[in-house]
Image (cartoon, rainbow, N blue to C red; front, side, top):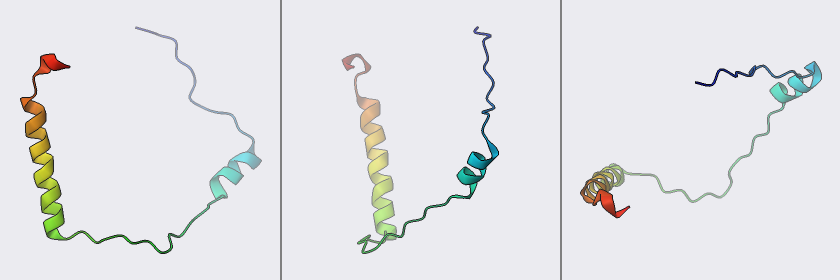
Length: 64
């Protein structure tokens, strides 16, 4: 086991730290055409995930 451990504390000047903590840049998405998911869409996503899991279990592990 490796016993070399480095300290996780990073030294930083207080001005840099205050800039890092206080600076917030936000963007607003404009003109997005996102479709709302219906219950049927969520059901299909779940069904497809189950099918993909079944297919991955059926694969021959020696083919990798």
